[in-house]
Image (cartoon, rainbow, N blue to C red; front, side, top):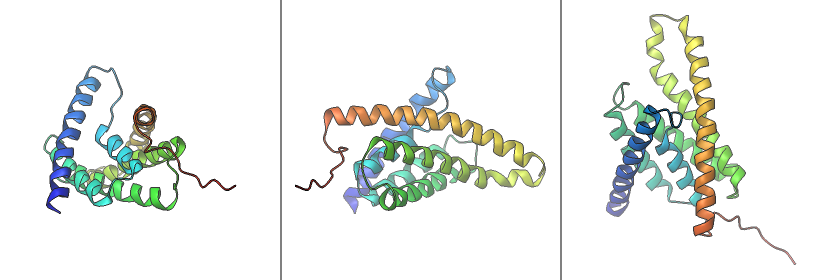
Length: 177
């Protein structure tokens, strides 16, 4: 357990650095807003990493990202952990092969799930002005669509890169003779 905690904490720091770099690139409008930590964690799910390590990393990363977030403390940690819990279940129950299409479906699903969870957590702001809910939801889903495309491109790059380096993401089908 101690080894898993150390791995999760170390991986969280790497994800925080990656998130900060992507934030700088977003500020210069080089790439659209990305949740690079979400993308990398979805990719790690596809690699077949232990679920406990993924969820601990999501929680640690979320808590560290919450330090810079304008939302309430714990919002990103809760959203990231819930999103990855759902993504792990989807990956193990519905997307059983390790193909590019399965990874992209998982990435798009995780992106929209994350956006919806963040929206629901922050929905208390709409108690003052309930008419703005639909406008904010539409805006959130439009940004989610742009993020889904960007996340898919990042996942494609990670997938192709990992296939060139390793055989871990090659689908293993049973060949009958």
